[in-house]
Amino acid sequence: MAAASCADLTGFMLADTTITLAQSYTAGSTVSGSTKAPVDLCRVAGTIKPGPQSNIHFEVWIPTEANWNGKYQQTVIDADHDLVKALESWVGQGIAPQRIIATHYVNNVASQGVAFQRPLCPYPERAEYVGSGDPNDASNFQCVVHHGAHDPRNIGPQKAYK
Image (tube, rainbow, N blue to C red; front, side):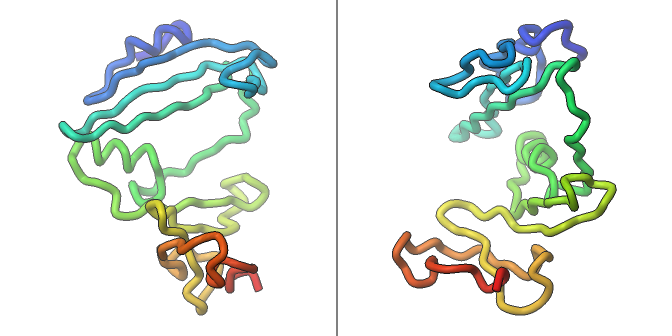
């Protein structure tokens, strides 16, 4: 379904999903609190309810076609590497993500290759380097409980950055 305008996105139909807001903003206008729109954009918010006790709220800001800089590029491999695919699998098939890998590309350009990857961990955990292997490879990190701001394990640089 192609939307004729930002507001038309409220009629976009996805399984177990309700679009609760689709509003246009001009560059410099206040979007929320003191946050200003960096460019003309469409602010879209909604709720995904994959089960009776689930409520996943989301919000995305989509630049208008005239303001698209062409720099965002996503290479989808599988649900482990793509948040949208992970959510689609969870909502559509009831398969909750076991892990999601975040990727940073060289110079933010996918065609230049991967600079590094990290696992995204469920709160209150965080990714911690296991101490061996390539520190740019997500498989050399594990999710560990973040103990507290003053815990010695949380102070100073991580092993991967030494």
